[in-house]
Image (cartoon, rainbow, N blue to C red):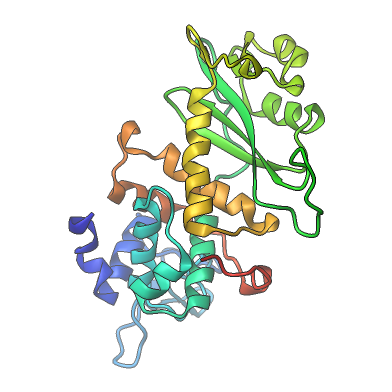
Length: 310
């Protein structure tokens, strides 16, 4: 980690722009307004901002920040890159207060910056099905936090619900659902897992009959009878994911408004799906996060109502 953060792109603004341009514009600068490539000139005047180009087709200036999570941000790009690598390398996440202290930006800026990076980590909806022939996917749900304005009641109905699918030896996909029932769970599972896959879950009622009909097989462990492993049948992989997720949410972030939960899930999914065991180191993980910054501009107006986490 020390070797990564000592790179010039984290301390020199020109080096930061050069590095981002090399990753987002592999074939040269592209005008974000007209997609022009051929008639682009780099501006080099003494008063010109770093990384500014001019498109001679639409006659508009632009930088690599336009159309990304960096757009309209007054935070230096080198600090953005520091924040990305810190968020990508911290297994349980890093709080806004910690970013505020380390980067020397305001707490408000650190909170908003971290949400923009989580947005860059978020995958699109058009993902290939998980599993397949010989594949095993574990399915489980967990409860976290408290829904806003809901009275605390026995049974967890006042808590936020997360559904996660984890392919053994592969990736995870997590979803915020309104309630843990078959009506909410089954459509997500069917849409995201290949029919040839073996499904593993606990013995909750909403995981029962329908999964056996939709997939190659469906095996359960009876947690109510203290059964956790039966040969290869278990849900320990997805429960291990939840263990890490909850340690991060309770120990690092402490509070999460329900409307922002999907971004925190994207953050934990991203790190899990690009973990060392799959051959991805800290620097490669940060480079992958950078690939997601395009087309995901997030305005402060959409996030300002949330209480800043600890």
